[in-house]
Image: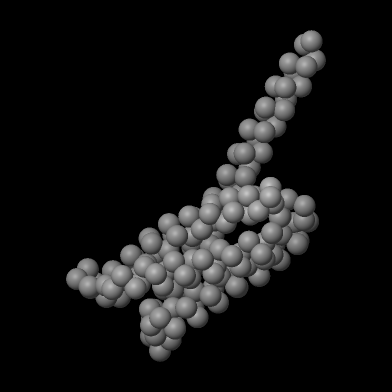
Amino acid sequence: MEKITVYMKNFFRIYARITAWTIFATSCFITVFWGWDLDLNVGLLWQMQMIVFVCTAGSILIVGEVDVDSKKVVLIKFILNYLYVNGVIMSGGFYFDWFSFSNWKMVVSMQLLIAIGYLIIVIFGFYVANREAEQMNQKLAEKERLENQK
């Protein structure tokens, strides 16, 4: 049961980060290529959520637990994960007609937004994990100090 809880916590943590970036990136993309006056269908929100869900589920499976892997294995996992996320978004974008492969500016913009978003999410994830580790180490050091005083 604990493993399921950890998985769900991880899933929603990553899902929230990817969703936040997706909303920002989509807003930028639509504004640049279709302008401010575009009327959108609510279906776009469901399409985005589906793509985010698929990206999140696959990312958790590909990356897994990186704290037990060597730096080389972690790097390979993150490269494979980036390729997976990129493939899901580009395939989904093509399927849902978010862009056209014949418009190179749209393709380059999508690639740029995917790369920037991936980097931001990964860097933020490492920052949060590092901060949590430091807090745990401080608590352990304090507990040890209190035990040594007894």
